[in-house]
Image 1 (cartoon, rainbow, N blue to C red):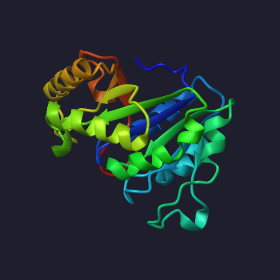
Image 2: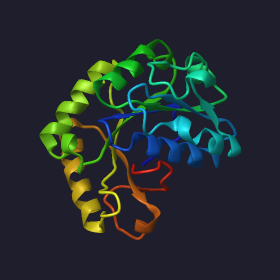
Image 3: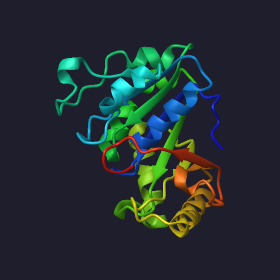
Image 4: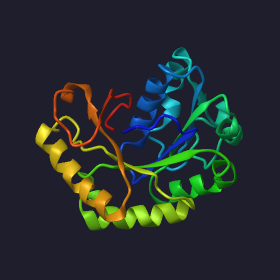
Length: 220
């Protein structure tokens, strides 16, 4: 279940796991309840699926996109917005961190440790069990342990994101959940939710469903 009482929500995982899509959807969902919501794009790894691409839509919804300076928005440079720390610590804001994939992304999150450790931060490890890096219990556990070490923080929750783009079926969703359930039980890390497209709202999932829309151009 999504505990919305946390101050900061950081999403990490392997490349292509769907972190950005879920972070965007959570920011939009949080805005329904909280007046001040910010989402920080600290993905310095992927030039393709980044929060910055939805910045105008976020602004229209009243969500603050925390981004690199305008002149560097489309540059493939490892730039972390200088005001990220301020939004992390600002008690008036719920702050969501869209972190880059793999080890390098986790290192970026670790570089913000001085800010993160001062507030109630939840770290979500997003798992798409149909990606080649996370298609087995052993692989998933290895990545969780390594990335949490790189990020210098513990993973608070797991997120199941079982999709094969437009080929996803209810059976895929349930099979993916069962795999992540094994990981959760072995590591003692709870599953926060299962992310599914709105068309799967009637599927009976093991975990709480978080219905999402696609905002990225290709896939989440």
